[in-house]
Image 1 (cartoon, helix red, strand yellow):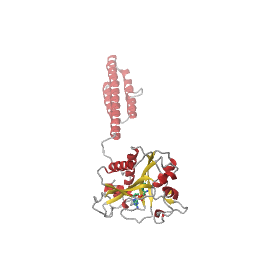
Image 2: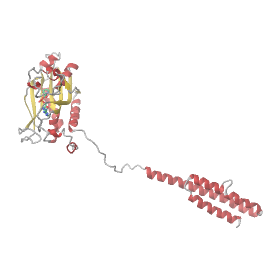
Image 3: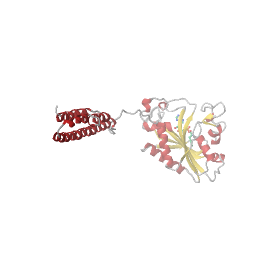
Image 4: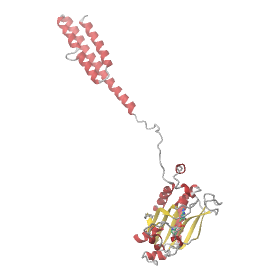
Length: 341
Ligand code: FA5
């Protein structure tokens, strides 16, 4: 075989080997094999010595061309390998932001927490601060400082859970207004959400563990007009619709005058049902002007300072909002119930 023929064959062989290379390393190896210092082309060119000057010229030229060709095969293949590498990478790592993912199991806030946060927003927007207090309270904070006489029926074992050390589980969030009166300097506006406990027979509208939000405003010249305005603002923002209310006298030892603000039952639209005990009305918002004895007990001059207070039952508020006909759902842990909110 002539040297020219050998070189032509070498080019073909190199091309096939280069195209079959799958990695940069394999490519380098093939390049070395064919056009490296000790490569196949070099050994073929050893035959040049036996050729005539003329033949040397043409064959030498051909050898140079072979070198260039093989180099260009190598570079083209190198480019191809690189492109394929990125193509695969892109395919594997592509992030499709529109692709729908399997649904996440999400929990929801309990409807009582949701309404509590809403009420907190409503009142903070009116300049109220949020206060907290302990669930285990002293008799003094829960009753004594609130003008309950020693023989008041609410202190009765029937209504109150006492602890062995003589304290009790607070029966209402009004215990927090006592803490506010003691610790804050008037004028002030606070609300205090919390869990309260009563030794009660549980039925559709009574729990032994439920939630209230206490509210208290103390300042100079605070009147019933301020109280009514605040309650109406609260209810219209909570129910986002016209609700019928009625105010009737209500007795609480720590307010004078005291009121019961009732709401037209939204479960039965006032027709009468088990939630409103067939009356069409539901007791929702007891309130009143702070009793002078309570202010004096906190060492505030009742001639200078006056105030109003209210205690909102959250469980019943949520029942009214969604037309829930049994308070026992709230603590049932029933996920079919809770997932609706
Ligand atoms: C009180 O607890 C007073 N501390 C409220 C108050 C505060 C009056 C400030 C004046 C000034 P009452 O016992 O009525 O009041 O309870 C208040 C609200 O808690 C009720 O209107 C009702 O919505 C809710 N509530 C009372 N008992 C239960 C119960 N067993 N289960 C569920 N909610 C209840």
